[in-house]
Image (cartoon, rainbow, N blue to C red; front, side, top):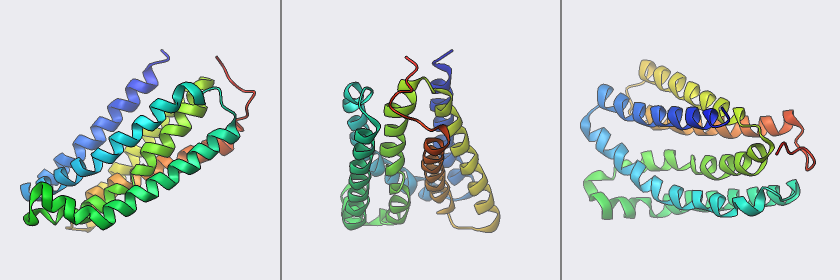
Length: 199
């Protein structure tokens, strides 16, 4: 029962990622699919690395005070900003190395997707260090359901009113921002403090 929110969250995230590729393939060209796939692969490299930060800190941070956790989150926000800046500066070079100059169209997609790095770090930290240790598992699934809903709304509206493939990665980025906003909303609404731990 406790694991159900994590299963649902993982499932909805998978649905979102796979749907993005399907929508691009259905409404645009296979070239666009290749550009999106390359951009996603490049974006996934730093994202996978930084996600290990929260995993490494988890044993120590579940007993840390909120003030310490907030300091860690601020540091992670700085790391996220650095990664985005790095991809802006070196993104074209990385794309040229991995896919050749013919794939430079993936650059704009990469920059849009890169803003999701804050979700990987900050949202992961808030749930791992604050909500999960307090037994508030349901918020993990609710958070991802809002992200999935925002993705579909933005993607479908974008496809109706625009013929630009960038509406799909934009929908992915907005869904990531939705996760971030919802997490900060939860922090304010639940009045989390150091003494409230249901373990």
